[in-house]
Image 1 (tube, rainbow, N blue to C red):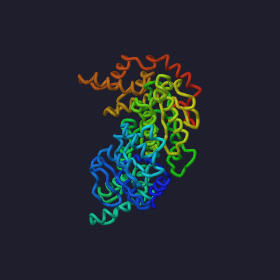
Image 2: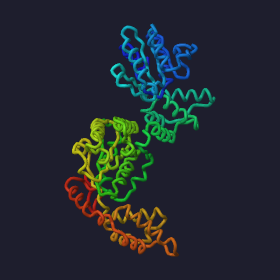
Image 3: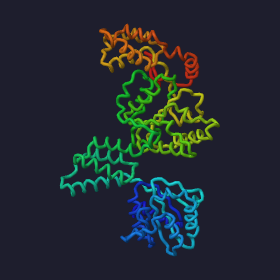
Length: 500
């Protein structure tokens, strides 16, 4: 007996009149109940608005006169026969008062005449009047042993149908495929395995990468989380020496699947607006060599009560299932505002996030950024929930020199043709984005003439604008004063050692 079948049998024997199953695996649910009906010796029916009511255990003509939701509920209420009734995609009809009353009367008479209503749909919101009569049931995700069995089944099927030889693979690729299929439904796992095999009759590392991308597409709540898989280039950003060294010392502990305790949990990146905090978060993913997931608080919030917290839980579940990965939360203070004007949504979001931060056991590294530390609650930034607080200041001179070289090289300009030391000296107070814009402006300034971009044109462009350190002088001064004794600098000075 499978674990799902065992759990369902216990549930049905516990005298529960209404069972809610949120699942996209309708055929798997039907197969389970057809087997279960034989075990509990009760007739099982399925209802759809297209066919009406029909038996599950064997083929019979459906009762199409019972296709209307009201009529089938009246029929179930009036029948004197025990039974299990699977109501497929009944969710659009659960908000009608007559249907709610009929369902309630069926459930209330369960003790005298057991008739179990099983509502199956991709999403189910039960009316308040029925919640005390209902219980939710979730199909188990396949474990690693089941996934290996599915891979063997699909490989055998490919041989039989196509008349081909054995599926080519290696033990490492096979193990990686099974690991990356964890967390998705059995039907989705089977489909991805089938696609991997049919492509070239082999399971390779390229298939593993494709499966990981497809897994994200299946799991991601639309618009809440964005995904960046190839993060290797992020490790090459200029500066951030202290941050990079800190991450490098913890990389092995984070990536070790056998390590159950004390693996790195996350950091908070504080800094001036536009100073490179987002780039630092990307650099974390690049140094660890894992996917980067970005949580968008703007897409998270919903006008309906409870939906925002639900969206956050789904997003965090997605991150857990994509582990190992980096979860980047940009400008976190804007998402957890706890003012009275939001009807407590901010406090509930904060509570959900704090609980996840404290209790998660998955290898999800949190990289949160903030502009205004004063808006963050103390419980969010205490040790245990994050490992370290880094301050991303405006880039120092030696980093600005590297930034110029990077942006010149990206535009097919040879840094050796420029006086990088003079450019670094003249760009005091500029952010990395400001330096990039100076290079872009110089390209446009010279595009109409015969001359090429030169050190002089770059110096002229910088002289014609005010750096961020001038525009936001007061704010930067206050932020630096706060961070001086409370944070670790992300940038090292030209001669400083990195922190432990």
